[in-house]
Image 1 (cartoon, rainbow, N blue to C red):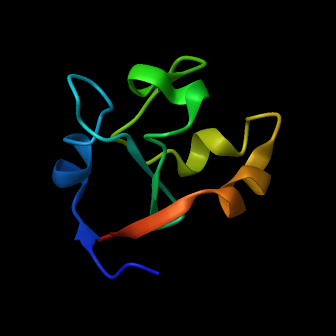
Image 2: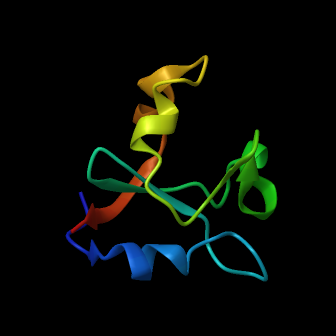
Length: 77
């Protein structure tokens, strides 16, 4: 697991737009969604990358089951 720490401000720079990587935080961990087709351009079903989506993922049909397939790049501090 990566040890990089992200503030919310730093995380917001990873919005998936204009060539930026797409990262989201869930329960304190930061995940890379850059290569996930459903997150093209940093958007997925009305959600945007670069944010803490801990609350929003609990409402998603897949829940947290998809997290095990993603790469952790750090933690939110």
